[in-house]
Length: 109
Image (tube, rainbow, N blue to C red; front, side, top):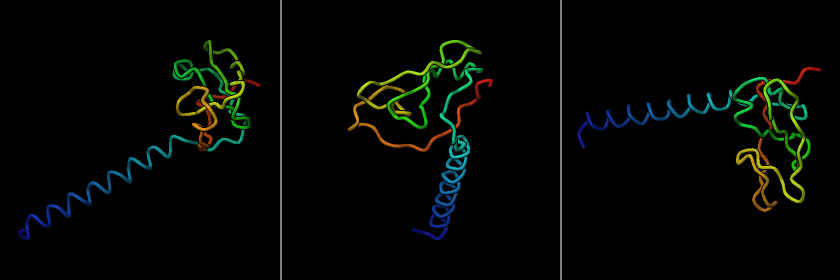
């Protein structure tokens, strides 16, 4: 291996590491820690399109945005848990805790 190809590989590796750091910071900034029950305001198209939002205090429950600018409906998974990534009720063996993130909007008081 020549000196030039070794330098090129080092530069490429450094660029790849920087890209990973930037992407990681971008993804982390999307999640704002939430200490509420997680109820979304259902005020954006994205909230309606996603439809389901985790209940932050009770893993057996979740919120459903059904109509724009209307309160979310509280639903239950019965004997299962709501998986915040899969947006579905799953068996407890398939459920994992994930950090709680604030919804895009909040309901009006």
